[in-house]
Image (cartoon, rainbow, N blue to C red; front, side):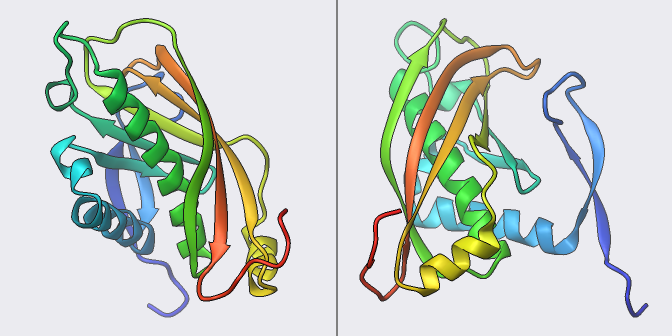
Amino acid sequence: MPGTVNRILMPCPVFPANNPLIIKTITIQEYKMINELQTFLHKEIPLTKDMGLEIKQFNGENILLKAPLINNINDKGSVFGGSSSALMIIAAWSLIKLNCEEFQIEADIVVHKNETVWQKAMFQDLFLQASFNLHYEFKKIKSILAGGRHQRIECLIKLRDEDANIYSTMTAKYVIIPKASTPKEDR
């Protein structure tokens, strides 16, 4: 039917996970973007496939990823810090990547700096929730990049369980660099 957006029902955790499973309506385009990114991650960063990484939800401002404990376990039976750190970096990178795709921004995204605080050991599957520390207007970012400059983005990533209990937090800074051009100015 002309003028309508095709929507599908997809079970996914909510932000925050007061209720571990709800039915959320997303567009077919959003579903495709999520699946394409997960396929890209598993192909281009094979570690993500070995870690069992799944993208569970994306809403523009937040992304939620999941990885099983069994793939990311240490010798004590808890989550391996190296795995959780890598997954948190990938979660925020994925949030930025999906926003760039949504606004048709051709760019490279690189992590610049991060700081992690582990609060307690985790003995269950990992949920990684990434969000922006500030409100970023990707339409404006597209203009900045078109001018040959790059954009810095800061994210907060939480390692949590299914019930939204937090085990670790990371703040990370990323840089979005326009493809095929040299940055003119550091923002």
